Image (tube, rainbow, N blue to C red; front, side, top):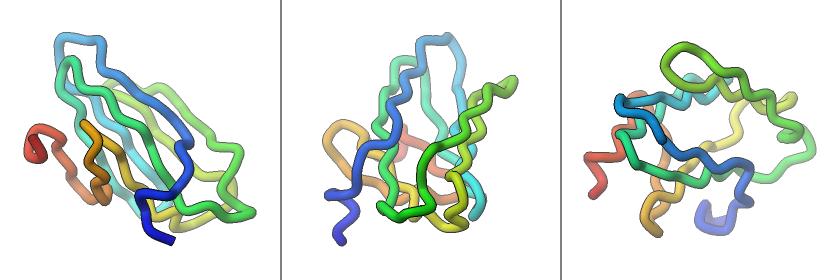
Length: 94
């Protein structure tokens, strides 16, 4: 399945004055959102994907799939689908 067809499993917007991070587990990947950035979180649909566990941390969120060890995380940012890596800075994809 093409990642652009993956389901949206979360939406995140940075309403703060500093950067925030999405820490995507279990394959550790990180997406950094600058102030004002908004993304849709996409993941390969599997039986073990949902429900997600989302925990607030000091500089963003830790996001874990239910039992899927590699959800093939992507984000949709300004209509562009981007593979999450460590690190992925959205400002590099303008």
